[in-house]
Length: 147
Image (cartoon, rainbow, N blue to C red; front, side, top):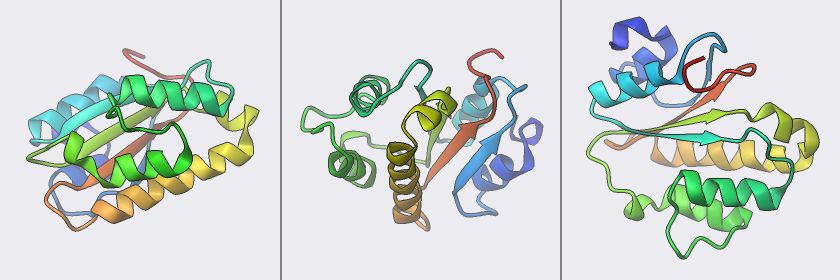
């Protein structure tokens, strides 16, 4: 299936390109990305931010969707710690995080969104070059599951 996903993700999954923060077309189901990741031996998770308008909601959504550990303190430093200490989420291959519905939060809280982008980019950089890299897909538009 990796041949049917957009080239940037396919290149990450086959190891020819280091993981990064990648766009995903709004008209493609995110399940395609998750299936390709599974096929490549990666684990995957979806962080759906639809309806999130503030930091508290964002942190709650992260805790629930990503099944963050009990020690997650629901602040930026704790989120960064969870994404760079993934001992709570063991993987044999890489990890794919698909972020959907983020545009509303980015508009409602642009300063917080800027922090989110930095935390995600730093986490991707932290895992780059390891056998369990982290890639993040930012779904464009209003797409989501099955879109």
